Image 1 (spheres, rainbow, N blue to C red):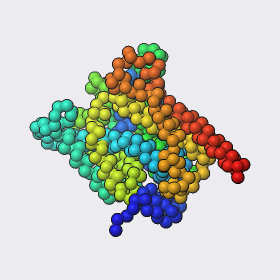
Image 2 (cartoon, helix red, strand yellow):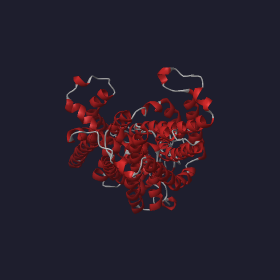
Image 3 (cartoon, rainbow, N blue to C red):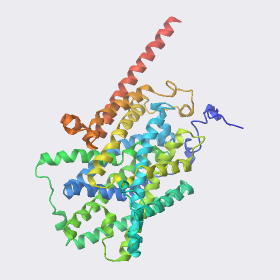
Image 4 (cartoon, rainbow, N blue to C red):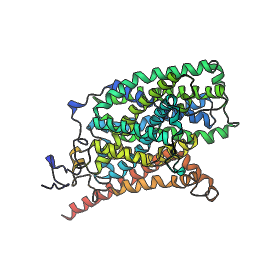
Length: 503
């Protein structure tokens, strides 16, 4: 018997909007405490992209304390939307794509969900490439001929045979964890929370020893000769730091829906996010600064650095550590959320596994090895670029939940095609308008950054707006959405009064 995707289920919910993966978590199953959220952030922060984040700032010209301060400020800023968006998840037990229905509409929620999912696919690809490249380094050390395999990909793709094989092997491992299901993630995160700090301390010890002590390493000067030069780099770098977790700041309800209480998710995130990011970034800063003393050049990629070690066993241990940490972060940060986002497109047909497989395929097609070719591209063409898309979504959701709806949602209606969140044919026009208006100011700067538009053709101030992409998008969309909704509510109230008077 063929099932109508719009079939009405229990409580009047539509099967096109409701599934086991998207359903509210009952209070009896909300078991995550403060430690679980602290461990979550320790595990997700202690990853290679965090290390590379700090390294890219050193390579970009900052000294050690400037880089650490930039990272700490950025993560303290992004903590606010993280906790605010997490509130609805903890209160109602709903994931991000369902929460987005309250502001964008039951069908319009697919817009922010897919934008968020595509970014997560990019991160999945990046993490998988890093993990795969670490495996390549282990194989290359023990089987040198692996480095000289015949080239089978066109030069324009920028992909060599050995790294490609390792990449696909690591990709298959990620897909196997997806097959095992979401329960396997919790064990990986706890394991990594204990394992990776030991590896980070070992790397820090090596850098201090080989770099003749901490003093010479931290004495490395800033490359900026004036305060003006520093701030020209600082503000876009700060936007990149905020953008680093702009993805999780949206879909944090995917995790806080399991919280025992609001206190658990708030305290856990405060204890876990800024300290973990800052401390692990310090390792990246020290080690990257030490590479200049040891090798005469700044090496920002830890996989390339670890491959320079003389001992085959040490190289292997380092690479295995990188692969394990990358796998844990990849599944938690870059599979859970996009899997839910893709499931939101068609809950009756796409479950967590299928959503995870879709993420994996797009993660390959996005050519991740090109996204992290150099540190400037990592910040300006990746982190800032996608923050210009996600900032406006965050502004709209927080404006709606806290200032329009006053934290009050009718959960059942979030799963109904005909309910209070239907708006106009399932889309809230105000949210779509606010999203577009929030993105537009950053478009010219992005086009000049990727060289599609000549910089001389744009006024300097328009290009500079892009350096504040997340902040500009967030606040513009926040304000526009608020006033559009207030105006719409005022018109609706006036129409109701007029209808009453007419009757």
